[in-house]
Every structure is written in C-alpha cells, then in structure tokens.
Image (cartoon, rainbow, N blue to C red):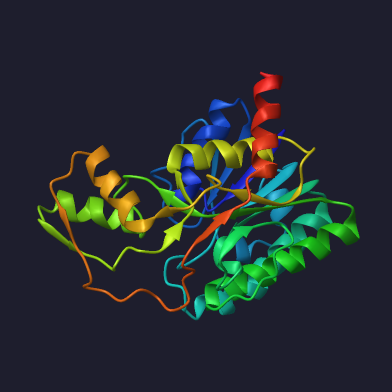
Length: 280
C-alpha cells in the first residue's frame, strides 16, 4: 500500500506519517513549504497541491489519499476556509479521476455544530463556523465523488487532541508554549464544557489503523468515546507534564457555538482497532 499524506508537516500530519512509517507503510509526504518535522523514512514532496497539473502522477501514483492539508484550522472563521474549498474539491477530483483507489479525508467534529450527546455517523450536521461549513461541504462532495467513481470513501472525524508539542494552536500547545516562556498564569475560560479528548499518540494510531484497512468505511470518529470536563482535562495535562503554570479561570468567555457536552460514538474505531490487534 502506498499512501499519500497531504499536510504532512502539520501538527497532526507529522504524527500520522510517523505512525504509518512505523507500521511499514510506503508513505509519500506532501508538504507545502517546510519539511523539517516529517519522518525521513517517508518520500517527501515539497509542493503546492493546488498548482499541480497532474497531482496523481506528480505525487507518485498512490493507492490511498489521506488528505489532511488545511489552512487556519484553529481560526474557525477565517475566510480561507471558504476560499480554499473549491481548490480542495478540484484536487481530490483530479486524484480520483486519475486513479487513486481510496480517499480518506480529515474531518472535524465542528462539522456537527451545536449538539449535545454522542455523535454518530448519521448525526445531522449544522455547522456554525466557516471551518465547520467548509469541512462539511468537502465531506459531502468527496463522498459523492467517491460514490460516482467506485472509490472507497473514509471520513476521519477528529475530536479534541491532547499533545504537549508547542508547535500547534490548540489550548494544550499554547499552555506548553506559555510554560516554556516562563509564564505563571494562563488565561482560561470557565472550563465547564465536556468534550471528547484523545491523546495525540492515540489519534495517530487510530488514523493510521483506519487508513490501512478497507473493511470499515464511511464516517469514522477518531475519538476516545466519552466526555470529560475541559477544566479537568487541562488540569490533568498540566499535572502529567509537571508544569508549574496555573489556570486563570474566567478570563475568556466560552464560545457560544461550542457544545456543552459532546463526544464521538466509538463503535467503528473500536472495531478497527480490534481487527488491527487480531491481524498483528
């Protein structure tokens, strides 16, 4: 199996590329500008995906496209989400037209919008940010493209990823940055919302395991499967990493479009991980 990973030098892409390489997969890592964080076991291609005339051939004729490339993922109402949407669509369409056998797109729970409870594959989507709207539109168009061409479709819906890398824009990355800069206090919300948190290493393993198999397809939640209060997870993160920094509660308001308690239904990913253990 030859897997093309776009966005390979990004915060999420680097861990997934490493996990795929650890699993013995032939990886082509496509990066827009920098390549310094990409596992050197991968075949690295530095390029602008949207400017390639024949991306399938220029990127090594992969069997699988794992499309993780995305700008401004943590800036939920950045205009780039809508501006780039037709470019993502055109890139995926060219890959399908030229012969890729499976498309695995990186999605987000923000496609759902305001919702409380367990998110399943059939949960209706009502996104309330430009990021969520664009991701949801790409999910639907990619699904249609794959259906019309007989290509395997997977949509990996990511939840709240916990990692202690300072190279990212998540709250956990920002706390790590603040700790390394010697800050003693970190401005925080009330922290009362309950979300589905998944550790970075587990996220990478789940994504790799999903892409490496073809039995379980469609929308797959990359998740932990249960909710935890934001304040509790962040406090535990600080303790796990032995940081000195303290949370300054109530400095920022909770976002109006964030769900109060939401988590992913982990039925599919549990089946994938169970099959993975059996096969190994």
